[in-house]
Length: 89
Image 1 (cartoon, rainbow, N blue to C red):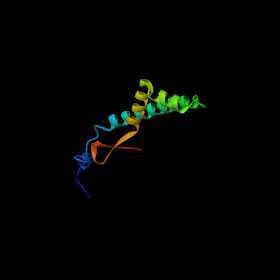
Image 2: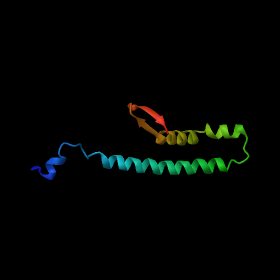
Image 3: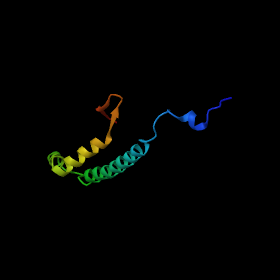
Image 4: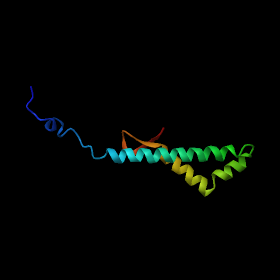
């Protein structure tokens, strides 16, 4: 039989202060990936029979390059190495 209160049993087991920020970040990046994925799919689908040069020119445009970079960054997740080491999943 323990004489410790329920509060004492959970004290010093870790902080719960960062959970809401992590939850919010997951939702924002999920929404960004859905929107960017739809943009990429529609953009490539409308290029049906485009030549290689046309697709390369489209990908090298500033808007397409910036949105592609945002999509790549949103897909990157930190590894166990910390915030410096990233891996694409």
